[in-house]
Length: 198
Image (cartoon, rainbow, N blue to C red; front, side):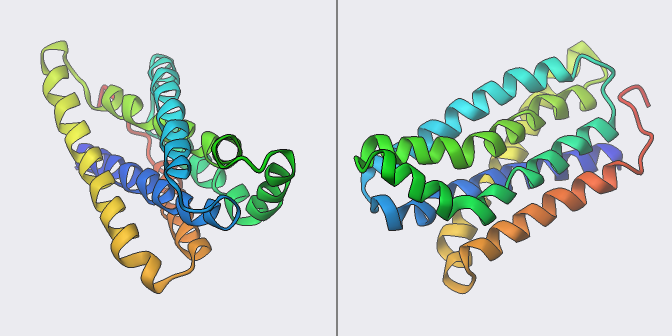
């Protein structure tokens, strides 16, 4: 059951990262429009942040991995979304003063708003794998299943946000819901003493 819980948490992480990414266009549009530059900037920042997060998560997973530390990544991911809610307009105004070029302006804006949460969310997948793997022989199977579930969460997060959530809720409300789902997941992990060897 504990391993199923980790798969569920990886699903939530995948869902969350794509929900935030899909909202990025809505957040940047009032300042930089809805051109391909906006999405190029958002996707690029998320890819770079996630790739660095994968590296950092792999390193973190080598140092006495535990479910409590794993939960800490979810809590940090949730808290990293707060600047998007409270400071996005200030950061967008500042970015727009620095440059009105939709290419470099949107790239800088995406960096300021989305790099940190995407980076922290990127640490979750490799840490998940470390918690699940009990033998070297099963590592490929576990990694494949984990990435399947995480990517499925990302796909559902993309469709749910783009097709439904934005029609019924404000952007900040969706981010708040994402934030609380990450925080609740992380807090629940703090009550567990489970380790990968259990």
